[in-house]
Image 1 (cartoon, rainbow, N blue to C red):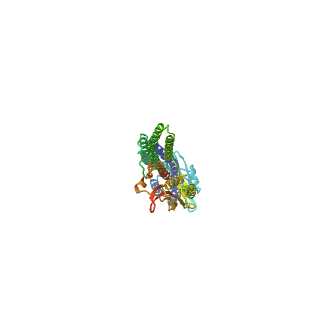
Image 2: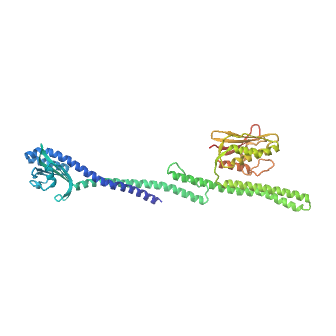
Image 3: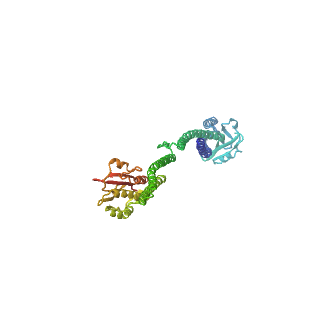
Length: 456
């Protein structure tokens, strides 16, 4: 993968350079051509002005010096003719005295018009740029001056500049290659860490995690975070299943043993109808207890095995429903249920979580509440969260028992009744809702069971 990433980076960089530099090379040639031509036109008019008095007096040596000085400085050929198109001065000495009347650009200049262009020169062995301007004395044309410049020289200048561009392109490719090596190494290094952690997890190391950092691409950070969340979830599920199997085997042993003893004792009392009926009734009680225990274990296993999603939930309707459902039972037990119902209060919770937790709290409170007492269900609204309180007037619990109350199979009742799973299920529902549960000591005595949930 590293090689492919490196090749992709270099291919992109090369494509960008080609797309940019090819048009740039053509543009440079046009620009250099125009620059040379403009320079020749300017210089031709300046030289014509300087040559005018010398042509008029036919002072040839200074005229030759002017032409030679310019040719040495600019690299262009200079030809100066009189009004009859006879060469008076030239940087090519063999041309002195020649008749240039057969040169179209010369004849055009002698009638007063400047001429510029590009043509092939047999004498110079290639294509040239030329500028021919008239030499005037007052209103009369007394001669002409022609500058010629080989296009090969223009091409040489363009080639040097293109060479510089190519050098910059090569350096750019080298820089891109170095950056590609670093980036590809960074990407593949993090992917290799994810791969190594995946192998560790597959080999049974449930604690395998990918080291995360603040740097790097956001997609890689998201992938690392997603892997760690998955690994944590998988570890929790597997450990929960192990705990479930261990707890189930331990907790089911007692009612099964009691059921076996009841049935064995029933066999010895079949001759006594009353004793047989009692034994069978006790056996049914054990079966019912076993059924409740199995239902609780299955409910807890489903909670730990499902990916539940919290969403905004109205608090008021849930409290009203609990009041209407539990009110008759409270009246039958001689206990008063007092509720405060909030208006337009929304929290983040798994659907049904508030109802199940409150049912568990109210059931536990009713079991310990003395006749004639009052159980309060109230709401405490904070800035970022909401607390639901179920407060009873029972005997209460010490700090150690309150801390252990949400453990599986822990029973705080002296008679050992219950399955010890109700508060464990409540704690799990609160956790997947992004909230928490706790038991506080109520003022005076009793328990204040609290469910804390986030506000949207």
